[in-house]
Picture 1 (cartoon, rainbow, N blue to C red):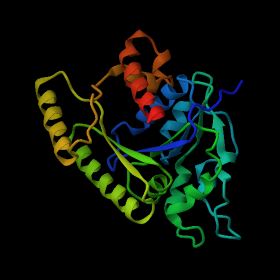
Picture 2 (cartoon, rainbow, N blue to C red):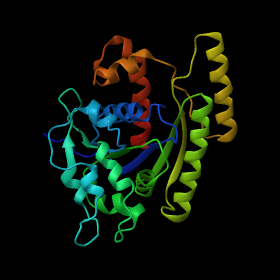
Picture 3 (cartoon, rainbow, N blue to C red):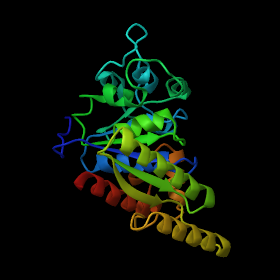
Length: 274
């Protein structure tokens, strides 16, 4: 039996950073799986041509991907309203039954550089998603590690955006670049977009030099984003990497992943209840 919605209104949240390798895809997977395990109907929109979320979720076979969704009809040069519905797939049996995905692969590089006239370039995902998200409680969008057209589309069709950052110099710079893009989208494309804050990933608790670096960069983030860096930070946990590599949700990976699973459960509860 399909679970009913637990929220009256679908919430759309995006995760961003200009810098790659900060854990956005892993974050999206774990928040999505935790929310679905709590009983929510969750959709993940994979907007990264690397397709890491898609690979981990091992979805059922389908004809359409995010590339099809964001490619204008050659005859009309328009995006068909609600077309994203035809690209929604169930995830693999190891994932909660109420977790779905719109998949991505390297062909998504095409829409990133498509300057076709017609539907405004920054609004293509918004038009394609119109009416297609109503059956979900939570829609999470994993953005590519850049601030190009795909990221602009994701933010234009989101209610809230959060930055995922590592306590490392380049990731801090990436967070600052991502915030500039958020500001731009708020000004020109989506005045209702809320900047939720910054989640810090892989904070180092061991090794003297690693601890010093993590603390230094965390303080930089707090300085750049006053009152917007979430507590607690996620420490560097091997089970998170291992579960992701095994294409498994944290809650089914074993006792060693219990702490991390509890961390993401709390984030999922927050996302569903806000």
